[in-house]
Length: 126
Length: 244
Image 1 (tube, each protein chain N blue to C red):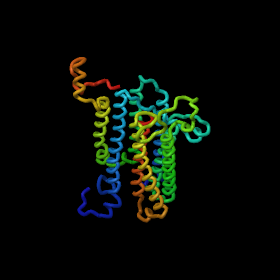
Image 2: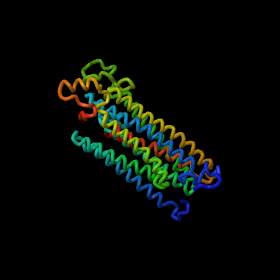
Image 3: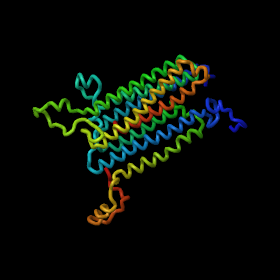
Image 4: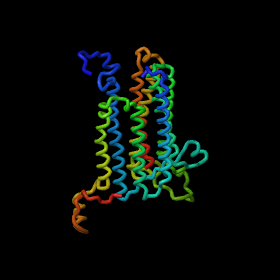
């Protein structure tokens, strides 16, 4: 990389433009945080935040941490373990509303009102 | 890729043995993955606890109401600015990350003065973030009851049952809210603190010419990876704690 004749100017330009993108995305997040306040839009707001945060994470990891410049095998070595995090996230968010429920009381509730429901049914946790 | 003999100096200090990168950098990446798992577990637990609490009918705290103080504006002018201070903290940390990248880039060109300059700015940025975080904690702990202890007149609005926050209870929401705030931001703050210390040591080494003698600024890159990780975690913490 020291062989470039522009004294690193192209790299620096890339760094500053990435900084601009990060600042812009953060500003957008703030605008959305204060703009989308209705409870109906909550899920959409969360979804947008998740996507924007992942974009920021991608920019930081790929450009600032130079992972994008490394060999593909290293990129996959870092990226693939995060499948476990994705699983944990989805599992916990889905099961969060049922956490702490007792199978016995749940069955008892079920026989009182309707068919005994298996605990895996969506309780409509929101 | 497979050489007959392994040059141990090359293996430890530089050039391209495994995955085309130095041993130290590779190990730093693997450490960061493990640390990312730790932080992910903490944040996912936060999400789990929050969803569980809400579905059990216990309302969670609203960050826009809790984090409203801004230095000077709060104390002197009594203006409440929701989430503005935390936005400033995010900006400070991102800027310190940028100065770190610039230090790494200067290291590629073996320019000692520039590396030194950018590393110093990174240390300053990190220290500023820690100061801001201390201010946040102070206000979180002391709470929003102003001089409620001495006021026995009873003429003002309803006195809160508990003022401030600790690990047992807090005035903003369920105890778990305070616990998670302290634990996650505290754990992250510890990483920032250790990062500032490490950056300081590396800065002093740059000034002393250690890496100039070595011939490469790989150490600045490794430390840069750690610092960017700290910034990345903050991006997630900030989104999940304050924005959602």
